[in-house]
Image (cartoon, rainbow, N blue to C red; front, top):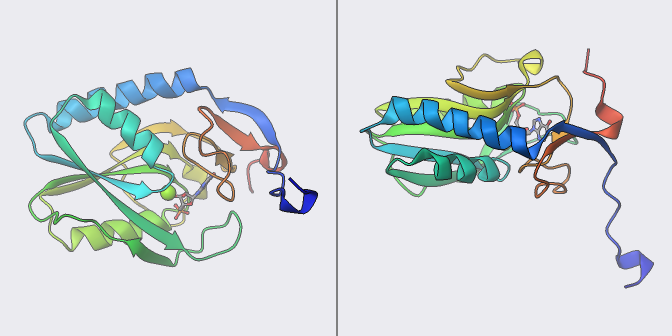
Amino acid sequence: MTATAMPEEPPALAGELISAAAIRQRVAELAQQVRADYEGGDLLLVGVLKAAVTFMVDLARELALPLEMDFMAVSSYGPGTESSGIVRIIKDLDVSIEGRHVLVVEDIVDTGATLRYLLRTLQARRPASLRVCTLLNKRKARKVEVALAYVGFEIPDCFVVGYGLDYEEQYRNMPHLALLADDTQPAE
Ligand code: IMP
Ligand code: MG
């Protein structure tokens, strides 16, 4: 391969924030809570592409409940690692959620803007219930309030990658979570 065909080097990482083993254990704990709450119900997991896929699949595998899965893709306009709050649906659900118990599965809640938009959109379709399960929560970064029924880990306001989360599409397949090397200090 010629040098010009090489992809740009992804940014360096600052070691491990949450290990694969710790993620696995926490996902199992979350699954126990979810199972207790939805036992006997008709559960629909709604995943937000692409980052939540890894978490959603692992959670679903631990759930041992009859459930269905569907996916949405949204894009929030804005450059780099900043979320702008303007959200657009790129791919909608395949199924109707009217009268169903919907659990939105998110990778991370940062400003909350994406999730608030998504919850408003889904609530208008009259589900029987609508709740959120997020693996990661950046409480300090919140700009709009959203109710989170299940939270895996509280993390500082730094940019994290791995376990589905990307920086410019890189690192999604890393089994643990790490900070970008130049983003190890929480934002003021
Ligand atoms: P929010 O609208 O600011 O809550 O965040 C929307 C989306 O930004 C999340 O669902 C993620 O896809 C992405 N995001 C926010 N923080 C991070 C991060 O630390 N790493 C990777 N993606 C992030
Ligand atoms: Mg996301």
